[in-house]
Amino acid sequence: MAGKTITFGIPCYNSAAYMDHCISSIVEGSGYASDVQVVVVDDGSATDNTLEKAQEWQTRYPDIVKAVHQENGGHGRAVMTAIEHAKGAYFKVVDSDDWLDGEALTTLLELLRSFVSYEVEVDLVVTNYVFEHMEDGKQRTIDYGFALPKDKVIGWSQIGHFNISQYMMMHALCYRTEVLRTCGLELPAHTFYVDNIYAYVPLPHCKTLYYLDVDLYRYFIGRDDQSVNLDVQIARKDQQLAVTYIMIHAYHLYDDVPVKELRRYMLGHLTLMLSVCSVISKMSDAPDARKILDDFWHDFQRYDMRMYNRARHGVVGTFMNFRGPVGERVTIGIYHAAQKLFKFN
Image (cartoon, rainbow, N blue to C red):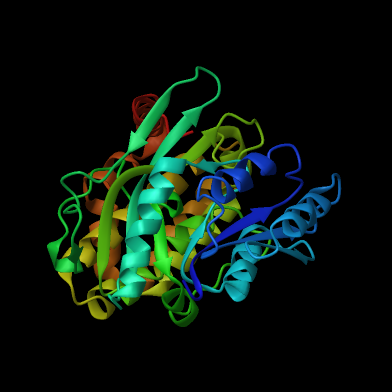
């Protein structure tokens, strides 16, 4: 088969202890397929031999693996670098501490090859992902049953309702590469949580999508320094606010997104991000945290009153923004209950 069907971008920063598992899950899991490209981006690793490991993989499989070094710029810049080097018709990000299921990968490759062979232009393929919890060995699968029709090419008008655990995070998404290159996607340097921008900004540029109901992506949860760790989130609340600000200002949803089903979905994702910002700001001990949060909401209100009203006064926005000391305790309690129920960090 001429050309590459898919590129997997793997951002790495001091990842030597676990990156082999990630890379091998793709190279070996695909059966060493010649139409697969793996771009391993060393993001200026300083404390281990990440770059050397990436280069070793390239030496062993020069037709599959490409090792790229860049000065440290953070996860988002590494993703953008991988997109720049991508030769595949499709593109998927896999974080270096995560991995892919081999059987599900085979199924995805067969589907994408059929799209390429028959020139079926599908802009987005959605697959399931699995939280792999290190502390208790339990798993939680995020699938899109009832939200997306299975095994058919659809437009956004055919999507259903997404529950609060079903928002399409980076782990679920496989974009057509050209969409990523032409949609105006920019992921800021030295910023965590940019995967939310990646999972939001390109969507209106995707005219067609396909839900493949396989458990492809295995999302490792358990390292104390992970960005989804609650204490880390609180410490990095400014970065969470910065990412959410970019998402807010990406679109005037009621003007820019004509398909109401997609607009509803995107507003739901944005509301969830705003709610996380509110909760972690209320958990913070920083003396100016609440003022910064209030200013943030006021900026949103000035930017787009209609979006603001829907986000702030809907069910999720209301429960995550109770006022006063008692209200804040209730909000935090609701968040902790959701945390235990959905096990998202």
